[in-house]
Amino acid sequence: MRRFAWQSVLALLLCLAGATMLPLADAVTALPFTIARTGAIELLLLGSVVVTMSGVNRLGGAVLLLFTVHIAAFMLLGGIAGNEGAARPSFFCLLAAAWLLAWRLNVVLSRLKLENRGERSLQRLAIPALFGVWILILWEGITRGAGIPFVLLPPPTAIAARFASSLPILGADLVQTVFKAVLAGYVIGCGSGFVVAILADRVPFLRKGMLPIGNLVSALPIIGIAPIMVMWFGFDWQSKAAVVVVMTFFPMLVNTVAGLAASGHMERDLMRTYASSYWQTLFKLRLPAAAPFIFNALKINSTLALIGAIVAEFFGTPIVGMGFRISTEVGRMNIDMVWAEIAVAAVAGSVFYGVVAFVERAVTFWHPSIRGG
Image (cartoon, rainbow, N blue to C red; front, side):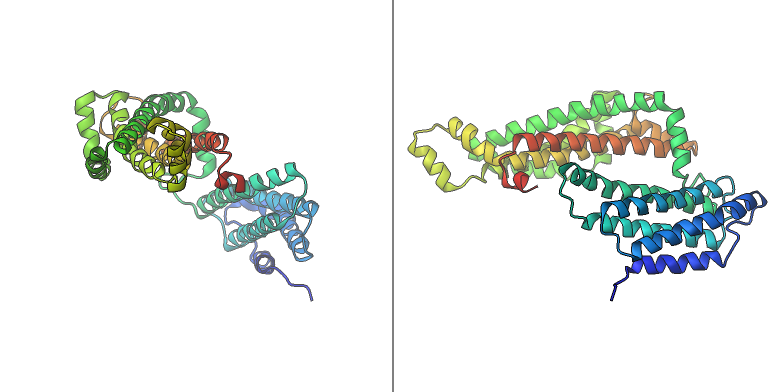
C-alpha cells in the first residue's frame, strides 16, 4: 500500500478549497487574472500533487515538481500585483498549497541519493536556496494579498526596486561601515586578543588578572560605550572601529586561551623529551591544536563586528554609513530603504563569515571536524 505524504494530501485539499472559492480577488482589475490564470494555476498545483503522490524518488521528478510549483506561485504573485488588499481566501489557499508542495520538494531533494559529486554539490545548494526563495514568496504574497501598508512591511519586490535605484548610496554606506570601521576594528580587536592570550598563557599572573577584566569589558553594553567612543575618537569611522575592538577582543582572548590548553599532556611531555623550548612547543603543537578555537572566535567576531559598527553609527557619524542610513530613513518612514540596508548588511555579514569559514577549512583541513564535513 502506497504511503502518501501529508503535504501532498493537504495541498490537494487546499487546491479543491481554492477552486470552490473563486474569484481570487475582489478588485475589478483582477478579473482577467481570475478568468485567465485560475485554471492554469489549479492544474499546475494538482499536477504537482499527482507527481508527489506517485513517489518522486528521482532527480527528474524533483525537477518537474520544481518547475510546476514555482510557475504556479509566480502566476499567483503576478496576478495579485496591483490589486493589493483585494485577495480572497482562495488566493491564500492556493498560495499555501504551493508552499506545501515546495516543502515536499525540499523533503524529496534531501532524501535523494546522488552519486555524481557535482549533483551532490547542487543538492546542498538547492535545499537552502529553495527555503530562502519561499520565505520571499510567502512574504510577497501575504503583504500584497492582505494589503499590509508598505510603511509597516514592504514586499520584497519593493525592497528590490529601492535597492536597484539606490546602489550608489548603498555602496558608499558599505564602504564606510564594512571596509573601514568593521575591518579595522576586527583586525585590531582579534589581533590584540590573540596577542594578550599568548602573553596570558606565558605569564600566569596575566592569565589570572586579564580574564576577569576581559569578562567585565565584554559585559559592557554597546549603547553605553558607543557615545563614549564617539567623544574620544570623533564622528568618523575610527570611533566605530573602537567599538568593534571592544566587542571582538574578549571572544578571541577566551577562545585562544582555551585552545592553547587543548593539547594533551602526553603531547607536551613528548615535546619536552625533544628538549623543545616554549616557543617551539607553542608553534609546532599548541597553536595547531588551538586553531579550531581561534577560528571559532574569528567566525563569532565576524558577525559581532558588523553589529557593533552599525549600532555605534546610531550615536554619531558623518552623513554616510549603514547605521546612519537606517536611523535616518526610519525617521523619514522610508522603510523600503531600511530593508535594503538590512539586506546589504546581511549579505556582507554572510560573505565575511563565509570567507573566514573557507580559510578555516584550508588551514585546518587535517582536523577531524573538517575531514568529517
